[in-house]
Length: 34
Length: 130
Image (cartoon, rainbow over all chains, first blue to last red):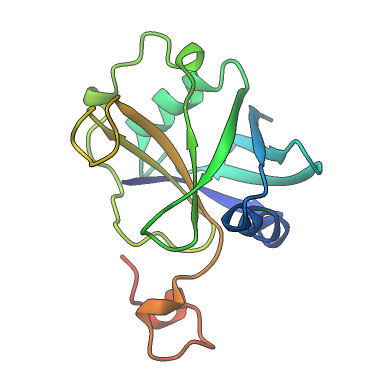
């Protein structure tokens, strides 16, 4: 696995959101260039 | 200028920003930046065995003419730390349960504390990752 990017803003909020997936909450990601 | 991309959770509007590590991973960054020529929209899937990572499968329409077998190994780890965005590719059938090729982005969102004897200290502080 290649580490090719680092999250530099919003990590805590993202962790909070994505942790819910384990409990069956659906999350859709949109990944886009800035 | 460092290239950046945004990860947004569409259901809630929560956003995060990531910076590319082009010096460490030039081939990976070139290929994955190309994939982002069109924004990727995909379900987030929690990793089954590897702790606090979330996987995002790259949809067909973002793959274009990229040959993932030419990217190779760059800045590799099996223990991502919080904030790492990781690329993984494996051919179909290589991993149990995956019949098709796996084009995967992994977002590591929290320290892997299960590998430390000090659960109050993030792994990266202990130098146990990578």
